[in-house]
Amino acid sequence: MSRPVRVRFAPSPTGPLHIGGVRTALFNYLFAKKNNGVFYLRIEDTDQNRFVPGAEQYIFEALEWLGISPSETVGKNEKFGPYRQSERKHLYKQYADQLIHSGWAYYAFDTPEALDMHRKQHEEQGKTFIYNWHNREKLDTSLVLSIEETNKRIAAGEDFVIRFKTPVNEVLELKDIIRGDIKFDTNLLDDKVLFKSDGMPTYHLANIVDDHLMETSHVIRGEEWLPSLPLHHLLYKAFGWEAPEFAHLPLILKPIGNGKLSKRDGDKMGFPVFPLEWKTEEGISSGYRETGYFPETVINFLALLGWNDGTDQELFSLNELVEKFDLNRVHKAGAKFDPDKNKWFNHQYLQKKSDVELTEIFSSVLTEKGISIENDKLIKIVSSIKERANFVSNFWELSDYFFEAPTSYDEKASKNWKEETPALMKQVIAVLESIDDFTSLNIETILKDWMTTNEIGMGKVMQPLRLSLVGALKGPHLFDIIELIGKEETVKRILKAIEKI
Image 1 (tube, one colour):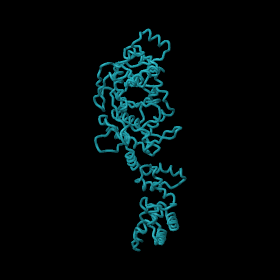
Image 2: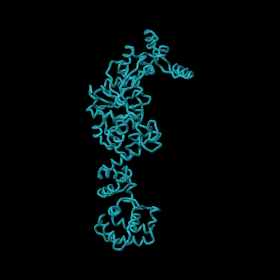
Image 3: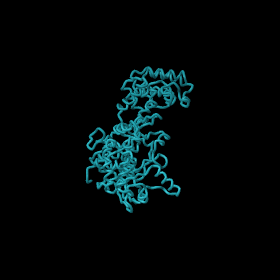
Image 4: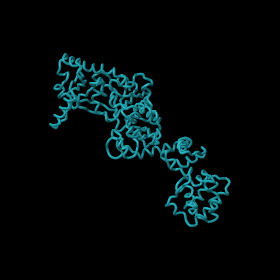
């Protein structure tokens, strides 16, 4: 690589950060770290009409939660600051003027009403109005006005925009790291607005100027920006600057069918499309963090949306992803989003967590419910149930019987409660009360020896006993449950079952 790697994530603070944007940030982060480069974040807030309060902070918080915070950004190592475009707006006019003077841009005075009239006329003829080479000298532009007339109109305060003057009859042969060679016919391109009548640059101008001034070496962004590639390439050429290398990431597709993943898909199918929860007056949009996903889960499944390392490996730590990441292994085709697979990923990471760490998370749930329990005992409970959970939020429904006696009994399971069951359960109580070393293994040994000696079938005791303690035929090893709820509670629950069932 001819220059140091500097890549950026440049979101607009117009709402919560979509999971597709998070993947773009992740791929930039991985590429920077892999190549000993810099990953920086620039806030592109030139469109003040769409600015949403709280959105900028949301972006920083989401990246921090995921462990992929930028090396440089607003208020942090501002080597090329400021890192908010709204604070850089004094820079852009000089570059727009430079393009005017070099013949790469022109003033356009067309009113919105005039442009609307042109569009309607074209529609009536079954055509699409495109502002470019074939009509720009027939419209209200500095290309047909004298310099004096142009300056006079600007001095008089007339509204104008500055448009890029796209070259005619050229075929641009451009390279994309992911997509290879791409050709664009300049005759099919429109003359984009670079500078608006409100004195603010458009995305295209600000983006190019900032990427140049911030010494961006590679632009890694979503596929939706591919149509902008020819204009951006031409802007670099117009300024006489070295262009960065480009890589356009594939779309993240809906779980069912084609099309870009949207919030509506998440609402319909019950999964988040945002990293963190987002609250508005209309309601709350769920986030991966609040739903119970671990940040490493989200990083892992996003990395595999459009990339793989060429092996069957599915679980990667962030460090492993940095080590293995290669833009040449990013696919061109869209990547289908799979909410069920994402749950599988979270299950895998949950199993990797220590019982102590999971207990710490679960204990806060119990505290909210007003339940107090010895930590050592809670660690054993967590250890016994975690295998069946995808999220820590599943722990309560998997373990409520450890803390509260059942208030009802599964109707189907109650068929195991026979006429002779109450008498058998009273005998079980007598055996349990005789045990001093009330540990799982010892309880199991003594109770099973008693059943063998008295020629009592396992099913006649074990199923009704589990039903008494749990309220259903579910849960981990029965004798672990007995040890953890204790002798007194076990006896109390059996007596209640005898009375109720």
